[in-house]
Image (cartoon, rainbow, N blue to C red; front, side, top):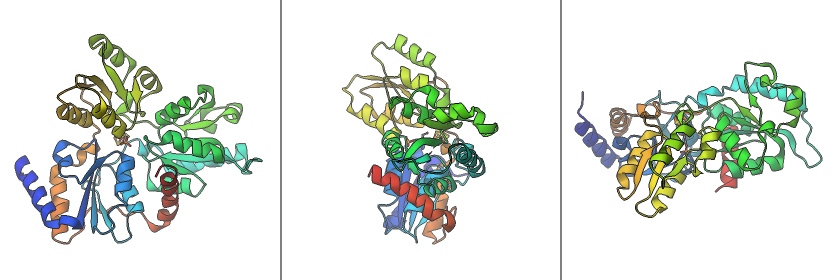
Length: 359
Ligand code: 13P
Ligand code: SF4
């Protein structure tokens, strides 16, 4: 097998040869040996926008997970190939909302609430999907007046949704949905969780009549691990610590933290802090360790003492990156992510609604 140094040299050589023919996008959770080759590093919203910004490149190599590559394919130009270096790089949260279960939920909600808009023209339920979802689900949403959000714009997107819907069906991440709706003043009793294995998702018809946000039951297994006890320990050991967490963390954790935000918001908060600051960060370990290395003037550590990588992000090994780039040099496209044309139009509509709310 190739040594680490050799792989780094192969990636650099292939990229240099390809020059403007390829754009390499990297999510903040990617390992350093991949991130250092990226033309853009960002959160999922920034990378979606970056995918639209290079219409002349032949290919976009997406170092991230499957739903991000699908989004890049939907938003990028027709002839452009989007490549995911490892096809097994999925997202377990995105997998928790399959279109069949969501379609079944939707039918039950239509039975309950009807399909007629109210006197303000708001439909009974407006579907909102987190970016972390399949293209098929984005198309489902787009075809029903709905919209996509990311962790950086969920509040603005929910405001938009409530102008058009009496209530919102939010998927797949119950935590992002709950944290965002709570910050808007919506009570917990108005946010039932929909469990697709139970009739009416496990709520009564009365509870659903009062609902403002129906939360799909999904979660991120990386962010679910963070606890209030970890925050208390960090505060006990570092009295001046600032705790900053991703909004995929459970509500009690977000409430106990000093701040919460998307990966880019976490990066910016740390960049803006005066030297000598201390941060306990509740998000994926590759980003936390990189921030700690980039900011020796601060003390930065992960809230969870047990290493917590996103195992699917981690599948993008430099060996796969070298391979897809060298294939491109040889004019071969491997690991292409192509969203079927039947799904393209409506999923693009849902994404473009988001881009219109938050350009
Ligand atoms: P961001 O949009 O904040 O980058 O989050 C994506 C993600 O998958 C977090 O787990
Ligand atoms: Fe999905 Fe969680 Fe990994 Fe983000 S960190 S890609 S939500 S599994």
